[in-house]
Length: 127
Image (cartoon, rainbow, N blue to C red; front, side, top):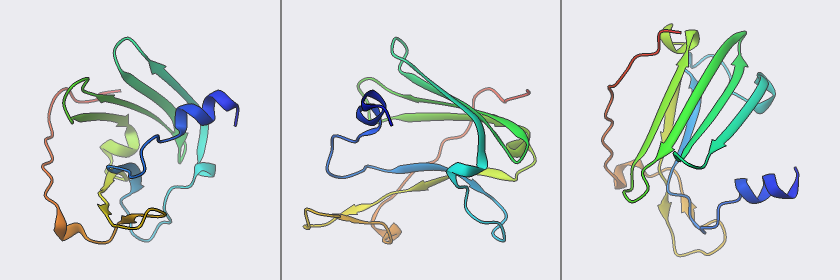
């Protein structure tokens, strides 16, 4: 990776707040690997605070727009693709719990220690 890319991708915080990821909905299929994505393109829009990604997965184009609120702890993601409409692709969320360890101080397997609210709505993707 170029130094600028590595800097952009680096997390300046010791602990991740969450992981948001795409996942195949069929449990018989393997998790999505970077090598499964074709023609990846990503653009950071500094003025409106969105990150737009596009790629092909399983032969279908996928568009992902992610935005964060400038002053609230709020995240919005929009995924548009035929593989989403056919329910073959979905979003996964993982929330860690911190630990007292400085190195590797995340515990990912304790989902009962937090509460989350999923709000769905807005415009549908028709393309």
